[in-house]
Length: 141
Image (cartoon, rainbow, N blue to C red; front, side):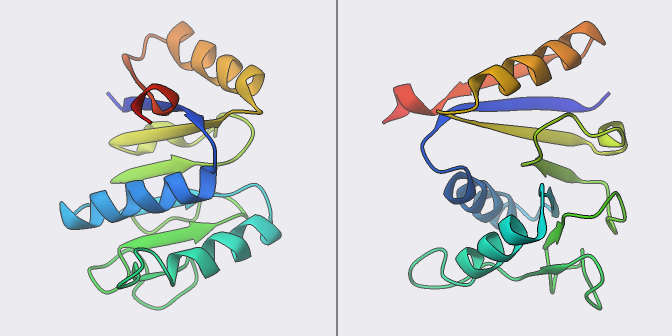
């Protein structure tokens, strides 16, 4: 069954996604990121080029050659479920994704200003019997 993790209280959801991608990459995990629109996808793309400050996270769009490989361990998409792997999914979309259960792990990042939508997604997974882990980023700071 898919492991669901909620990271709540994020002051900057894109930066949180970068931190989680970096950690996953260091552990050899492939990461797919679902984004709500092209503008957010472009913003995350730019941020990944400069995160961490002394390096970058290799990444590409779903249609990039070798996307989802060791060469491009992070794959971005704002247009559906055409991800080349099913390892880890970071959902930055506003709702639960209908294809989430294909992934081994799903990460939901909830910002400080979208807690209502986050509670709705949490309820969606809970009502379907998924075990949910919670990480409160506001308390970690």
